[in-house]
Image (cartoon, rainbow, N blue to C red; front, side):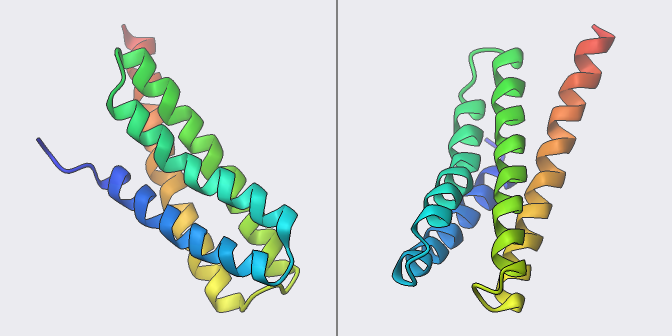
Length: 119
């Protein structure tokens, strides 16, 4: 079976988010940490579910949710950066990783949308 790039990237990203959220909690940013850990880890969870989808429609629905979660995560990361909560360089690296996931997931979702309209 071919290795899923989006599966590995979303998993690695979730690990980075968990580490960041641990630091957010240590610095008493509980609310933003809770939001970020939920959306940031949900990306990979939805990708995993998609890969076990019962149908193409199920696969693309889960990938669509993963894409939305990636966008929400990107929002929280931008807020963290612009609020100066953590080092801008570190924040920008995570924003870049989230943007890469958004591009991959958007491409997957768009492919599914294009294929379903041609059917």
